Length: 231
Image 1 (cartoon, rainbow, N blue to C red):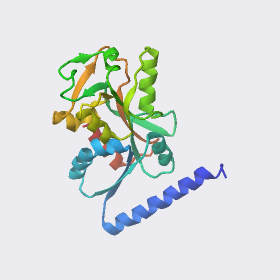
Image 2: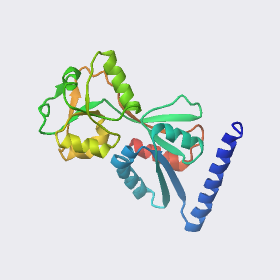
Image 3: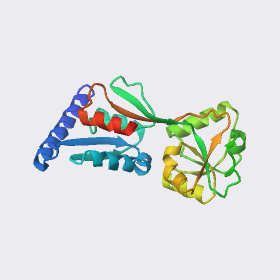
Image 4: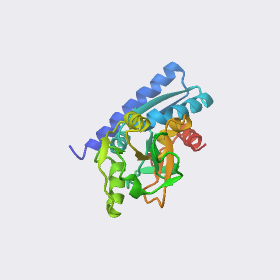
């Protein structure tokens, strides 16, 4: 059963792809883009990218699936979608990763917070503030906690959640501070609802976005999307 499982998954993926091909013929659609990404990315970043891409290529159809990073890799192995958008890479030789975005981690606070007018702030100061953090066992939380532990810095979470909307709500309410990448706060930063501050001598990991696909399985539409994302 274990030996047969990957072949069964591939067969099911091929059947679904065949159904999609027949449906595209029926609808007269010239291409299909299937994407997997996290809920936070789909909420904050992807709509703008998809809108501009669809404006350039109005004849395509799109499917978007939202899963955690580990689940995305599993679903790609089952050929549920062609392109994945993740924050992390894996060592799986069956996949290729393209980094399309990379920025330092920043501190995000309310405009009313005492740090709001600072250009930079030290981690030793940040950890004494009420912290808004992702839940334990998420990859980002594990990375940040590991680095802080190496620096002998400890904190007590004030709010802990895996919901980005709630994190933004707590920040805007001046209920605490949050460490993240600016890509997830873009709209709030533009509206000046949230303030982003650099971290002095920043040891925290960069916030990266990777497009991942199965090795040597990239069609022309996927190439167009990756190029558009980089623009």
